[in-house]
Amino acid sequence: MDSFFPDELYQGYITGLPGGRWWTIQLPFRDMTLTRLGRLSYIQKELDSTFALESIGFLVADGKPGPFRLEIGGV
Image (cartoon, rainbow, N blue to C red; front, side, top):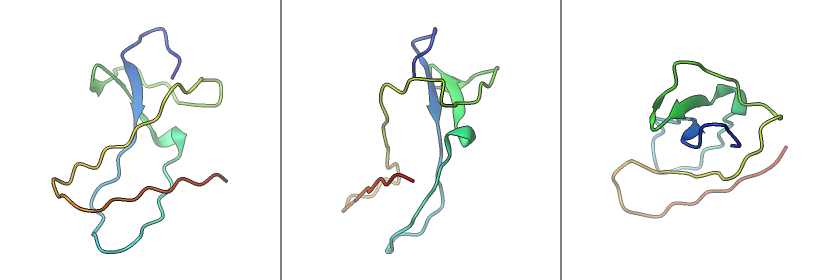
């Protein structure tokens, strides 16, 4: 996102989903957590439509090799 501090970013978390099937997940921007340099920011600003998103990334951190597929749909 466009920010005065270049090391700020919003993170959302999805945990505990069993494998072996498809999941449909909605993670609203309002549920994202503001971090700076990888740590929670003391001041939380809600991410809203006034921010300019510069990039988006995804990380699968289950430690398992194997197929992974991500589909993103709009509303």
